Image (cartoon, rainbow, N blue to C red; front, side, top):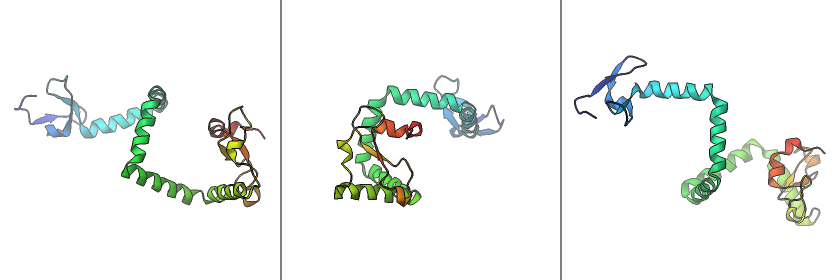
Length: 165
């Protein structure tokens, strides 16, 4: 980038701004984008809103093709001090947002401890032949339905909207 250029005019807002107000771009003549940072961010947000479905599909494709890498990264992040703090904060938010779920899960755990319910790992998923991993409160989280549960594997539990009881 030439040293003599210290100011540049934005192609969108037409304001003259310092070179530091433009994102770098190697293949351009001056080494920076033609739009200033403010205009670039605004237009990027608009592009993302306009093409939300395409953006979400691209993110989904990336996550599917890089699944192992993302899981390894998440595992490393969760081991860090920041990751542990973030997980703790998210857990606290979930407990505050859905206290009835926590009470229902605790009731199921106590029933398993007492022997009223078998451990979920001893059951098969009611939707598929896999081993169950979670209890599904199919009637909701009201106290009278705390022990009305079905054993499900994680993929079936994520798709519990399709569950017919």
